[in-house]
Structure formats: C-alpha cells, structure tokens
Length: 459
Image (cartoon, rainbow, N blue to C red; front, top):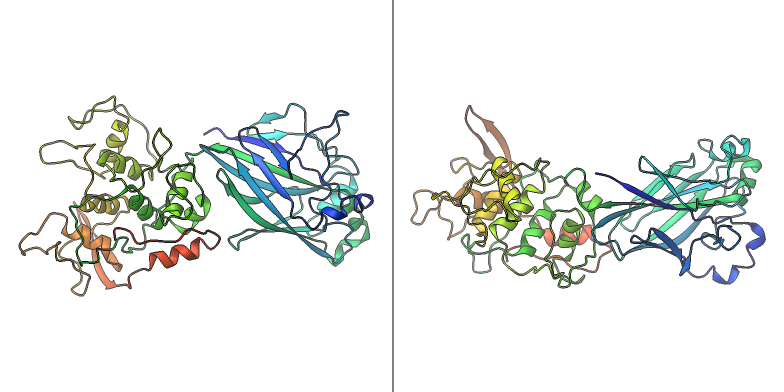
C-alpha cells in the first residue's frame, strides 16, 4: 500500500523578545487543524505558509510556556489537535521539536516525496555542535499525554512522537511536556530560545496493510439472549449488532490503534450506543456504508454483507471467481468476498448447493461464521452441564434440536478450554465456565473520552 506522507512544518520560534506580543493569547488553548483534503495545517484559522517575502509564518504562542527554561526545568502546555476532510483516509499525526539554529524552519515550496518521506529544508545544520548538544541523548525529553491516558515519550534526537490516529472531524486534547535535566547545562538551555515544533501528517487510505487482529485466545461469550429467555437463533441480526460483536472481539491493541468516535454516515450519531463500534470498524476498513451516505445500522445484514465483514479480518489474495455457488454471479460486488470466505472455510452454503447471498443471515448462521473466524471449534459432547442454555436451542436428543446447537452455546458462554486435535478434526474441550462479560461496562472504560454509551448485542 502506497503511503503518502504530508508534512507541514510548524515553527514556534519561542523567542524571548516575542513573549510580550503574544501575552494576551496565552490563556487560549491553541488549536492545530489538519485538512486532509489539502494537506495543510492551520492554527487558530491562520494558514501556515510563507509570507510575501518567502519567510515561514511564525506562531510563537503555540507553546508559550515552553520557553526560557533553565536546567532542571519542566514545562507543560495543552493544545487541541483536529483533523477534517479525511473521508476514506487514515490520518496519523506526529510532533517533534528541533532547534532552528536561530533560523526559521521553512518548508520547500514544492515538497519532495521520497520513499514515503517528506524532504524539507529546516535551515539547521546537523553538524553544528550546538544542534548536537541539544539533541544528545538525555539532554531534553518530550512527553505527550493523549486523551485515553496513554503517554508517548521521545528523547529529542530527531525522532517524532505520535499523536495517534485520527478520522475526519476528530479532535483530541493533548498535553505536551518539555523537560531539561539538571545535567543539561546552561549551554543547552540557551538553545531552547531557538526551539521549533514540527507537525507531520501521515495519510493513507482506510484499508490497512494488515487486517486488525481479533482475540482468538479468550473464548468469551459475545451475544446475549432476549428478555423472554430465548435466543431466537433463526431470527435476523442487524448491521449495528454485527459491528458491535466484532468491535468487542478485537484485541486491545487493534481497538486502540483504530479507535474512532466519529464517522461520516448520515444515520450514525455520536450519542447512539453502536457509534463506537461502527466508527472504529469503519476506520479499520472492515465495514462501510451505502452510496447514499447511510449505514442503516438497524437493518438486517445479508449473508453476502456478513461474508465481506468476516473475510476482511484475513489477509487474502483476490482470485478469479470460480463460480462455486450457482446463485453468486461473477459480476456482483460480493462475488470475490464469497469466494474468499469459502476458501477460508468460513462458509459452506446450503444443501442444494446455493449460497443465497441476498438473504438476511440468521443469528445462528452469524454465530457459526464468527466462531470459525475466531478459530473456535465447539463440540456438542464436550460442553459443560452448568452452562447457560436456551429453550429455543435444545440439546441433542431433545425435540427441535438443530445443527447449530453447539455454535450458539459457544457464542453465549464464556469458558476456558483445551483444544483437541485429531487426524481429521479439531475441537474444544470446555474446562470451566467464566462469568458473563459486562460488555457495556467494558466499552465505557474503552470510551472514557466518548459521550456514546454501550449497549447489549442482540437484546
């Protein structure tokens, strides 16, 4: 996947002589905005560009507290960072500090992209002894605190500190701390007067190089039944419910990486219980909406749509459609996904050889594909007697028993297990039941900076 690295250099010279000019603005939290459609940064509405004389416009009030520091000092500054017009894109922002050696940090008029990196002229001589003194390991540190409580640290050796991944119209409050150890010495402290700040934006399309990882180790139940005590395995499942299931089954690392609280769908508001799930999986390139801009969260999901979601968690190569199902035409958008799902062993079709792609998938069929996606292989003879049971999912030997019995039990019971492998099959042996996970409470922990609330799946 070709990455395009867009970098605009924001030079906050922090010159002591400019302190009084911007004193009145220091009470305002600076806002840095990146427009992904233009590749441009703005600060408080001012375009970061060269003026008529070709000199970079300066914003000394961007970090007004990080100046005139002495050895042993540490200063902190809050800023807001926002990304707009990022439809269909991932945007990751970075920040670094560098000495300007008394000169402005100026971007090339025509930036040169070489192997994904922006080539720019920072007017600072890397061989200059003063430059190396400031960036020597341990002489200065930069810490960025993100809204989710995570901190990223960087010794100022020319590296960058990530501000995280953004989607369109996402805003983050971040805290930047700059510190000079007591050992730095007055010579190093003097260089802080010439400290510049560089914001960099990395923009890629939404399909990641590697699919987001699912938690295939822990066998948590991921759906709940209805208030009447039934599971309704032959009923429908909505698009929002499917998004929520896979969202909760992501690894913590994948969820953090693709976390999003906003989306561009016309019918998914930030206050709705499924917002976090739909926004995050859309950001990860797993799900998408319709041509009219809607997502239709409360509509039933079809078998073709579900197949597309499931295979999106795998790395696979598009192959010419082999016509494995007579009712899946080659010219349909879902043909390649159905082909991949079949090759991955996620689907088998019906006894008559059809797949019925545009039929709404049942809850039992959805559980079966989810289990296969997670490499879960329940066996009806190796479950536990004290597990949660459902009157509309009778056990073997009982009236009304269906093929999906163990698949539904797997989906609704958290448990430990041992995996048994035989010559022609692999299956689980359940060992101990685990408490039912409180998914809404967990989601509230994950979304401590989000106003959306969690909800129960398939309730």
